[in-house]
Length: 112
Image 1: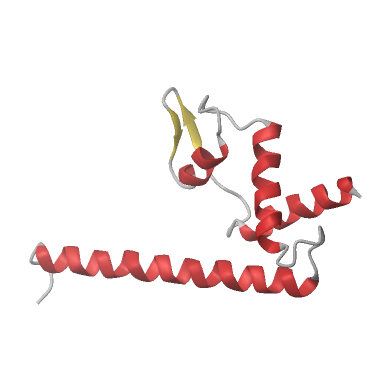
Image 2: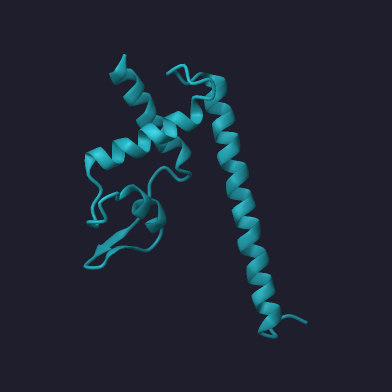
């Protein structure tokens, strides 16, 4: 039972992480480039690496977010609603970023 929950949690984590794969390049100072925010959140001990325990902790957290009725299972409806919520949040963040870029261009005199 716990194994099935864990596996479903890992799958859910991959599904809800947006792109599924996070690209990063490790340097002496830690994570860099695209996806570094997600990696930093997972790196609980701040050693610049993601251990299996850290990865599983994030997967369990994501699973908990999807398990709306907290019964220990994620139904197809819960998965569908979870993905909708993630997409809506992504659209909102993207809109804010684009609005900020437009505002910055206006301040810099790049817009008419």
